[in-house]
Image (cartoon, rainbow, N blue to C red):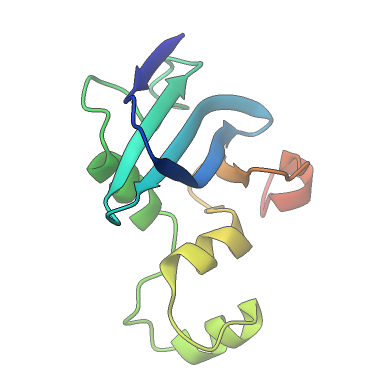
Length: 130
């Protein structure tokens, strides 16, 4: 188990989510926000070192790395069918975090997806291919 933890006082949890490869949890991520509005990576716990499954390999475990991962899990704002995609997801504006919450970051290219705190979904609930 590899874990990166930042101790913070007077902050609240902003986002907690797990990253899965099919039904295997490969990482847990927690992002907090301090009273001054500064967002900070609280921790990334890695449960797998398999480079085909683990999006947080290597030594660089920081908030920027998490955002890079998330940016690759939603569709870009310049899509010609953007309005239709947003309507399909029940959104009225382009909000990457809300897009990922609704799509779980599922992509056709791999078996990686995101399960958010409080959800009980499994791969079979979110997959778009076998």
